Image (cartoon, rainbow, N blue to C red; front, side):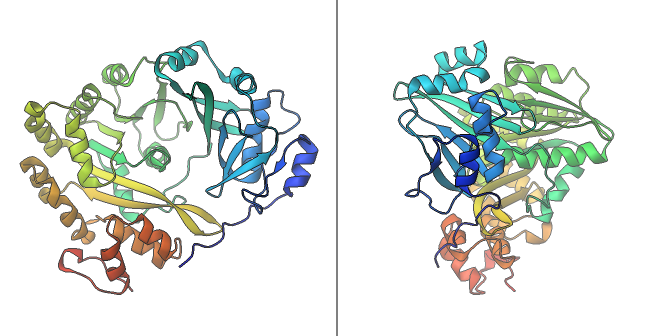
Length: 409
């Protein structure tokens, strides 16, 4: 089955928008003829602000600047090239100059890349990555919705609603870059903010969503501005009387161990890791530690890991839902904890598949749900499935013993 044509954003035509703002830029019909090309906004002073302001007008999620190419926009998951002269290295440096601070320049010089948030008044916030490639400077920026979405708006499965009700422990959210981890975490944190009288502290790099104090009160700390790194931020946060802690990314052994200790002492801790499935998350955590410490870390996970959520962001099949998450969700019940403790991680997938009634689901079960709801196509489901043969059997109503709980109506 072929994927449906990408939905068309509403609003003025590309030619109308472009003529009104910057006549030298238009749509490159060879790349995506039906997509509207974003256009700068005349009243903004900085050139980069004009490019950012074009993104919400045309539904663009990402902006890319690369020497030798015109500005590139991602609209409905398709790349759209502005029909304009290729950007030179000097032009890119001029474009990004208003955003750059000395510490970002130092980070790029030392590490080859820098991540930071950038806001345009009246337009929104953007997560920006400036990096070196082939000796030149490039930029990738993603538009961040300023309004924290709800789990329902994100099309997250109902089973995930149990997470904000947890009182203590470690919750890990995983997925590749761009899979929506930060947005899911923001939705979970905001539920706690709205429903519990507590103190929430976030450590982020960079800060994306801005929370307003509701029933809870929230302190947000940004790496490089408020605290030098995640390990220091997490070490200090334990002295700040938090109830809930959000760690933007868990990158090293020290951060993981401190997070585990924090969860053991009565805090609810959220963190992100990079793994493609819930069972792999356990192995990824262990990879940060030498083998002689694996038993100890398994002990800490046995007592403190409460849930693992892994997600993939897929192209939606409906115009009103351009992107939708497929979610694998593992709750650490007695069976899961026992397998983690005894090093039987390879069996966790079977436990997840057979524990639908307990609130768990694997990727195939999630894909089936999304198919039933008409949110994705069969082709997208099969392409995203870690086990497409099993998924195709389930789609025909064939359910194996380890797939009980997968019921296709």
